Image (cartoon, rainbow, N blue to C red):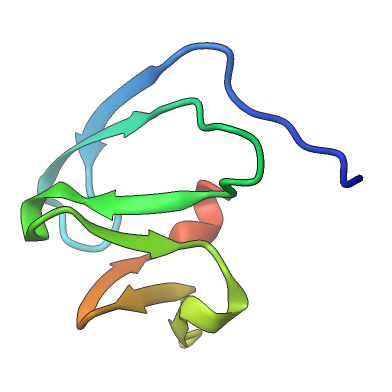
Length: 79
C-alpha cells in the first residue's frame, strides 16, 4: 500500500496568474483514496487533467500539463 495524503478541508485561493497577470480563482478539494491530483479547468468545460507524467506537454520554463487540447501551466508551484 502506498502512503497517501489528502486535504482535511476545502481551500479557496484567489490572486493573479503568474505569467498572465489575469485574476484567478482556485479551489483545492479533498479527494477519495487513489484519486491522485487532478486539475479541473472549469473555464474550459470542466476538462480534467491528471497530474501524471503522461499529461506533461511541455517543460520549457515551467511544467505544463494538457488533456483534450486544454493546458494548465506552472503546476510545479502547487505540486
